[in-house]
Length: 324
Image (cartoon, rainbow, N blue to C red):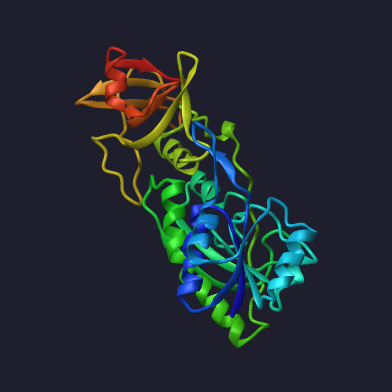
């Protein structure tokens, strides 16, 4: 099948490779324009642009799918358009340019978590079952007929970055199944069933951790905002990034149990970090508002400094600190 592919970040690359390996003719790739990255703000092609160049696929770099993009796609005469995390909406007349229209690999079990940040919002909500859905693009947001699905359970504390990478790989099977279904029956697909929920785009402020919440809630919040926009708290009024958290060493979490150990008779308020058995232990709140659960600060990054081991950071502060 002649396919035009639209995608931008690293999570879209496995799908592009899978389509090529399956023998489909990927006649063009659409991706966002080169953007400045890193501390030095070096202008860098998107991961999809890099992968397409390596595969010898003609590429259009565009931040808006306008009339020029539509004409470029039409000139490729594609049978099907495939979208995986492009970062923009496909509207008419581009929507109708491929013979079979467009399909999208979305990282949720639709209709749950339509929108820009499905994995992140699902993890923030404490969900461990995450999935992918391949559906037909229509004018309404993430509302088209479903062609294929897949889902799996993730351990508590899996970050959004880790979950997305895993789903990007496993989701290629669902994508290829959808393409095969359309090749066999251009009218394939079933309407979405169930109540829709929305996954709004994350902002930097979403990364602020509320230390009055329980360990389970904090770990879920951390997972949903890691690595982007990044979890953080305040120490002495400056941001302290939380790169890695874990259940406290004396707890035994599992898929059903709590993420942090109960802390009985502790006078320190929520937000207190102490050095215990070589680990930086963060006291948290609980359902009754008391400091009764804990997590380990595994890796942190103070403002203006490189990331470091949480215990090493705490030793530099005399073995105790209060976060907000």
